Image 1 (cartoon, rainbow, N blue to C red):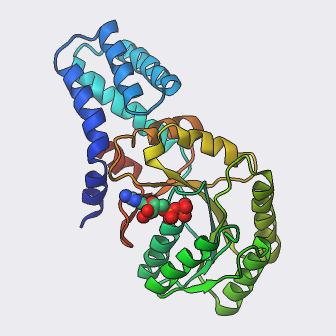
Image 2 (image 1 turned 90 degrees about the vertical axis):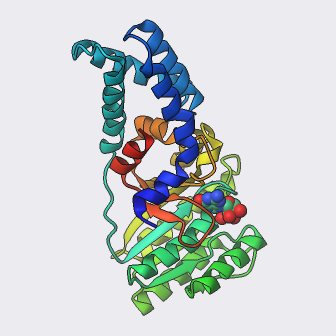
Amino acid sequence: MGLFKKIGNALKKTKDAFTRKIDAILSHGEVDDELFDDLTDVLISSDIGVKASMEIVEELRDECHSRKVRKAEDVKVVLKEIIERYFSDAPHIDLEYPAVITIIGVNGVGKTTTIGKLANYFKNLKKSVTLVAGDTFRAAASSQLNEWAGRTKTRIIKHTEGADAGAVVFDGIASAKANKTDVLLVDTAGRLHTKTNLMAELQKIEKIIDREYEQAHKYNFIVLDATTGQNALSQINAFSEYAHIDGIILTKLDGTAKGGVIIAIEKEYKLPVVFVGTGEGVDDIEDFNPKSFVSELF
Ligand code: GDP
């Protein structure tokens, strides 16, 4: 299935919630206060959030005014440009190798599944991959990752439950160096921000990667579950207190009408979305292309 088609399918519910309502408002009506109020309501109901929605419509109103937009349908063009701008303001990431990609995020967002998909993704790019079972907190985490390693025929470095996560990462790096591995994918515990010790563990992992693997390109990607809507924003806040975030992986875009949350994220944080999850299968991950995303949405 083509790239755009897959994202297009995954976005179906979000589009239903977002585009159709916008089209309905813009199809009949003049460019007046009521139209902008209705648009604000649609953005809010699409999980863009109250604050971001109001600011977006304020920007839209100003721009429509200065560009003397008279027709309701032209408002859509301006809205699309504004949203595109949020995405293009985020830095673009071109992965360089050898890479260490640390996957962070709360439990249940799809971290382990994403690591499995990424192992497959990089193998398709003819890159060698090693997984590091850095979530030593939950017994199930390591065995779940082990299953993905088996399914994707990928080397995995793991210790027993309760082991020091830093030590697993250390061994992972040693293995990556010895085997000249292109991509080291590091799983981490799904630390809720209340668990200060786990957050400290995350900092320790970062420190070990910096210290032990100087020549590697390091990326911290936070996994966010699109179905949680506005919660995703508070997760970015919580994690950025403890870790540098280089990019976002947005999972479960299929089956949710809340994909609009990504617009709020781009507006607030200017973090690049690197990949999106479009299903539970091993192939259900896509490079994120902001331009095609916005065109699909509209
Ligand atoms: P973790 O706790 O963050 O490691 O989360 P898991 O990887 O265990 O995933 C939690 C659930 O979300 C599992 O049932 C996955 O199959 C599901 N999941 C992960 N990514 C996606 C996705 O992109 N789309 C859908 N529909 N489900 C997903």
